[in-house]
Length: 305
Image 1 (cartoon, rainbow, N blue to C red):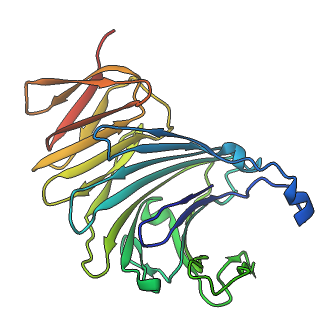
Image 2: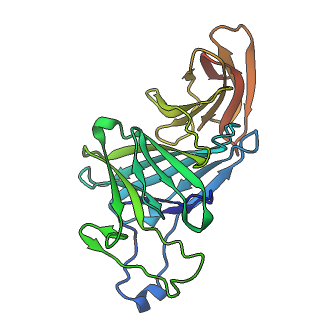
Image 3: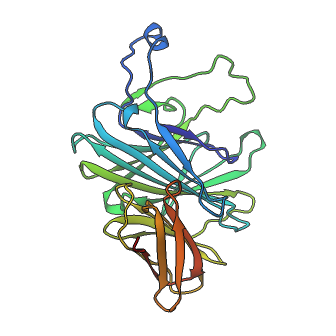
């Protein structure tokens, strides 16, 4: 499963657990029917914050029972960081010993940071910078490797699979040469991989503080800006639910909260320090609630039908 994102930086996001294709030569590949992911774009008010949900189980071999990706695009309204992407992947393997890999392919060499990695775009006049914050797996269960460079551009388990273009002088030649590779250290049937990508400019770099938040049934993040805190909370299993949701955000300032994977209907949002109850309409197409209000503790409850 791959996704191209244009942001003057680079990138291909890939989940790897062995793609399904029995082809052994070019002739067989020509007639092969690849199985790919199917996705749903979910518009969430305000419209500049869409969510994309991908089901990719059929694109992989029998080594996996389920592969799901949920992405939320945020426009933090911060001049230093005009865009951010929250990516939650849920992988259920047929055997806990099958290793799972989350890949971020880049054109230029990434650098390791305290929270993940950063990569800059300097070729062809580019000036972009991409910051990766790894929230899951947790640090004690995380292995992060930077793989690439001359002779290792497409290095996979001890072999470099060359992938040179027919016309290497083409100006748009942008085949990746590096990748950030993240894998859980401990064997498990089910793994969640939660990452946040922030787009900025290397001439005026910015990086917003981001941290993981989680409950028994949900996981997400808080992205902090000078004006407000952006909170995204998603179901761990990706299934829609009518259970009440507790949102425990920062204590100060304002916040924008997105809670996904909700059953359609009317939901009520109550702040711990306010008597007023807000009504939020969740449509079947959207399956999510969005609210803007003071920071602190919020409780979302589905109203009785």
